[in-house]
Length: 188
Image (cartoon, rainbow, N blue to C red):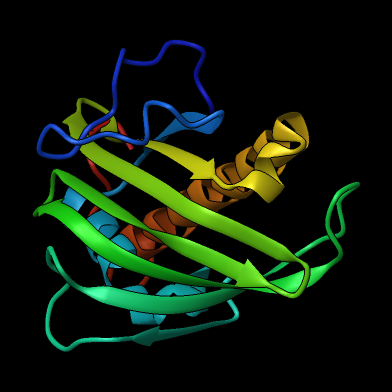
């Protein structure tokens, strides 16, 4: 799933993650499903809990299609680490950039009992290739608490992003090949 070759920068409308952040993780996966299926799974944030078990709740803070300026609050449990207790993280994300079917970028704080991330910046890109869609993602975290043990924070960020990519691939490929679903992308 994850690749060792990455583009130099993952951006949406020229905007990437926080270049000064000490905590960052980047990954990618090839999904054998149509771009519109993948895009709609990723941007219909209110339905995330239906295909991502780690998302336990979500609330849109605006109406309509996801767009620059849209905001949503979502929750996810996080395990105990050497520097933080197990808690439920409440993340408030605001979309800063969105180009339909190409890229998405959001940012915002995350807070749980005994855990605070001052700002997380998350960028996604979606590129049609011969065998499906290459989905790339990169995220950074900043804040004194998570930066106190950057290695542990990076490991947990990586675990979460890899799980997200796996869940997105599984849901999109199932939707593409299931009853009434889309035909698989070429090579899929």
